[in-house]
Length: 261
Length: 236
Image 1 (cartoon, each protein chain N blue to C red):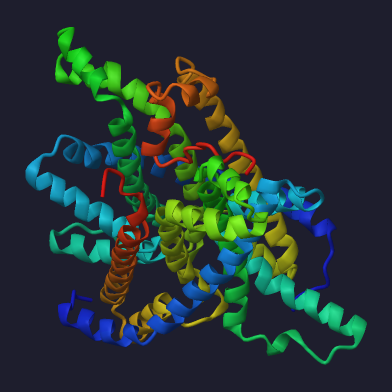
Image 2: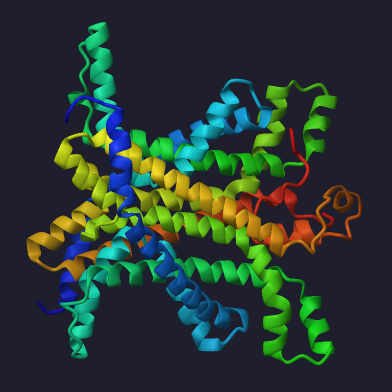
């Protein structure tokens, strides 16, 4: 299958693939932004238990988490123009990239809202009560007290979501978007050096996700700098459960006991 | 092209025939992935020399690259490797005799293995160290203690993550269409393009996936209730 393996092609393909890195990052960036906005809008009714909206956002989350992103891509690409045709909106000239970003945005939004919900609920209720006691309004308490704390708790999950999103963008080629995977397939069939292209492709993805992980780890350290670092103390006094308790709630490894087995 | 609600049902019935393929891919990759995951997790926890950096590299590479690239690398790389070895050693086996779905099985198992290893590892670390020490103190060997004491508890602790991984693999199996395996997604494409009704077909496929995911979640919550019986707390 294809031409014989030649490692030097990996290096010639790297710069060619990097040329389309912009498109991939554009998709990631835009859908991340859309996802955060959607995530907040969807999480709020669930956090404040707004009757009808709560059910709507639950159905939304269930759908986007319950179906594969690939199916969602096709569904939006083919379905949205037909639905919008009913209300006299013509979408035939809309670029594919818009559909892709929209789908990824909504998909990430569902996961973001779960993340936001878990992080906000992980903030001690006493914090909000204390904020109210000092005379803050609901909005003030949320933006000044809850949000900064929730942000630090949410970062590890956020980091996973961003990396998952980056990897999911490799599916955009199915709709004909020329991002990295699409480019790799063209390069592969052009030169018949499939293995080398995909190795180069994998390397680029690996480096980017590694960088994202490290960057967000730094952000986490910065945001949680007011928390205690030492875990020894927490283990001996069960009342100081802040740190480990929050981690469990935010669906992270609690890292309790067992280390070293 | 107008929306045709009745076709959703037609497509639904036609796509149903592809469910077994999707489930086969999911189940096989989850099972093999679980075995790989346990092995990798143990290597990482016990820091076995030589194997440890390999295991870390494997998990980092797989988790840092999209599932699609694994599939494509296996699909294009494995035949070259096998044919090369076969020519070298004079085997009669040729890569042509690997069925298409075999590539999906192999690649998805490798993918699942890396994710599973993280799930298993966090589960094992969630079991209190005292449990292992207590098992040692009543005279169990380490394999005994792992099998009888630690693994059951770790399984209970990692069940939610496990179910997420299964759902992830179920959704990931849609990629199998790139190696021309007819799973739910590929079947939806076929139904869509033969009838020129894309929206309806994909809607039916989405509904099927939604249903399957829902079933997995239900099943997990039932198992979770059963498996955590010992952990109720309180008296009696």
